Structure formats: C-alpha cells, structure tokens
Length: 418
Image 1 (cartoon, rainbow, N blue to C red):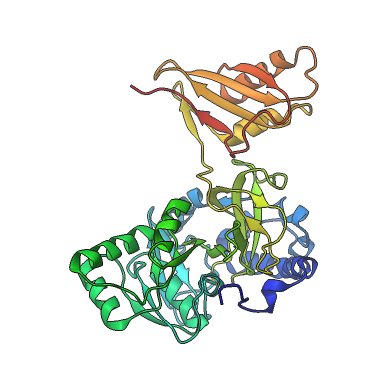
Image 2 (cartoon, one colour; image 1 turned 180 degrees about the vertical axis):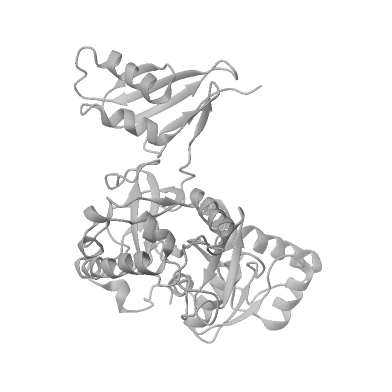
C-alpha cells in the first residue's frame, strides 16, 4: 500500500517534469510582479518571460524567511497591508484563513483544495481514502493543523481535530473512534501512547503516523515500529507548505511536485554542486502567496538517483540544521555572504569556512580555504580581503580541495563559553 503512487505525476520522466516546471516559471514570476506589490519591488527589472531555466532563476534575488517579518511590519506601518504586499489576493473569498508564526509572520491560506499540498506526503505515509486520521497539530495561530486537515481531505480521509494538549482526552478519543493513524509531532504521540499505557488501555487501531515539526531519528522510528506503528516524516514550512516527504524506501525525502527547489550556498543565492550541503530555496507555484526564491533558512543536500518506490522527482537528505550562521566577533557581526564575497575575489579558491575560536572576549578568526594551486602571496592577499570586507583581522589557512566538511557551514563558532 505505502509503495503505490498518489498520481501519475510522481512517476513522470524527469525531463518532462523539469520542462513543465520551467514552462510554469514565467507565468509565476509575472503573477508575483503584477499581483504582489512586494515582489514588484523585489523583481523590478526582471523579464518574466526570460525565466525559463534554473540558470536564469538563480540570478533572481533570494527573499529569506528572516526578512519576512521586516517586510510585513514595514507594510503595516505604511498601511499597505498586513502582509507587506507579499500576498497576491486580498482578504475575502480567495483567502479564507490567516495564520501566524513566531515573529510574528502572517501566512494566508488560499481557497483551492489542498492549498498546502500535503496530500502526497500523507498518502506516501500510507493513509488511504476512507480512513480516520487523528490530527494533533495545532489549529490555533499556526497553519499546521489546517495544512494536514486539508491534505487529508484531498486524500479522502476523515479527520479528528485533536490539536495539542489534553493527553487523557486524546487517549479517550482514540479509544472511542479507533483512528487508522496519527499526524502530529513524534514527541506528542509518544506522550499519548505512554499515557494510554498508564491508563491500562491499548490504542491498537493506530498503525501508521506522519510526523513533522521535530526531528525524527532512526532510534525513535524503531521505537514506534516495535509498537506496531509505521511512521514517516514530512518537511514543510508555514510559508510554502509541503516541500518534501519520506517514502517507504526511507532514503531521503522526495521533493513535492508543486515546487522548484534549489540548494544554495548560505548567505548567497548561488546554487551549490549536487551533494553539497546548502540552504533550501523554494519557488512555489502558488497564486495566493507567490514566494519566489524563498530562502527557508534550512540546510539540506540533493541526493543522487531516484527513489526506489518509483517516484522520479529529486530527493533531498532532509533537515540538516539552520543556514543563518551570522556570528558576532569582537563586537562586529560577520555574515556568511561576507565570507562568500571574500572567496569570490580569488578564482583559485574553492570552498571557504570562517572558524571562530578562543575564549569569550578573546576571539581568534581563521579563514580556511580550499585551493589546489596556492600562488605566492595568496595568503597575504586573502588576509587583506578579510580586513577589507569584515573590518577584522584573521589568520588564513590553505587546505587541499575536499578538506572542509560537507555540512553547509560557512561560519563555524568553535569558541568556548565559561
């Protein structure tokens, strides 16, 4: 059951999928420019009809999650709307709900069915039409509850709106209603099952689960399997909805059919080579909230090959940490983009990593760079560039190509705090 596909799109020839996505980009860029005042500014001067390849897309600016609060707050102060002009539709029938994430950042929900595109992830986790799902994501403020409910409805499932908290009542509802499975955070289902054990009842109907919002390590997956629950994870954000989802192959996460995903060097908009860890950047084909090159702030990497389940879309490793590595050094903020700017001044440099060590208030900066041909005077010239860009002094260490860890870190804070 879990190996079957949600629809034929998941098994498309990769070339046909790429052609369809690239053909949709000009319309999406034009929509953002014409219907979203914020993106009219961000994408000013961009020829939407020319954005028909990833190479051209990569030249557009990245709008990062860390910027959304500022954009929205400025819009409210200027009385141009609560979303700062990022939305493409107004309040009313086209926008039935609005949610809030920490910041606060406000997210609209559009009218179209399965707006957050969660159905594929739910189906891949083994849920099927006619089943009851116990949904324990929050229905208040954040969009997670609605994300999962609308996706479950698209699959053909009925949903019990469990929400968060009230553990004993959750146990009682599961006991009475006998749901086929659970959707929510992995930690809360564990709490529910442990409470059920304390109450002396068995929630035997729960055989499957889909998790999000927290890490789901193999040890916890095995804990659930030992209790007869086959659980999978999804990767989604409150801004763009579903990005990727786990399948029964358990080999990374398959990218959703409705997004264009890029992995870029943190602090920049430059795509990294396949397999290298970088920031997840998403362009979503969405007419309500048309985020173009949205920087999630999450780290991941592209996996080679295709999913053994027959799904042919790109796979990513999953969540691998946060990309925003801005660090305060000797009273000055240093940003990943500054490290990238330094490296770009020297064609002989490959990857670069700024390591901050020493004890608190006695910072030592070392810029480690990969180079196969360290010309005479290179270290001195790099040191000069570091001072020029960051206004700080740093040691420079030249390493052989491939020496730096593939973990997406551009700035490593290795200081000791006592």
